[in-house]
Amino acid sequence: MSGWKAAGISYVQYANICARAVRNSLKDDLRNAALIRNTNGLKYAKWENGVQKEGKFVRPQNEQASS
Image 1: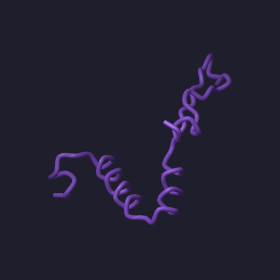
Image 2: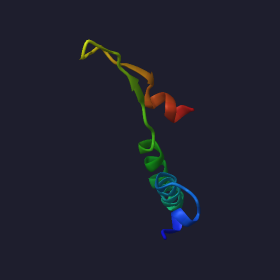
Image 3: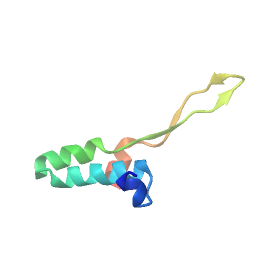
């Protein structure tokens, strides 16, 4: 059995823990660059009659980095 299964966590949680450990082990300048790349934006688009309307950012990447 895999270690993450034995620990009772999902693979995604395991991967996030590993990624956080790697980022925390980096030197300060590289750590800051890695933290900036770790942000995600959320975009919403409504579909009507099989056609996608214009999408709107619910939470752009630059807002996530500052929060």
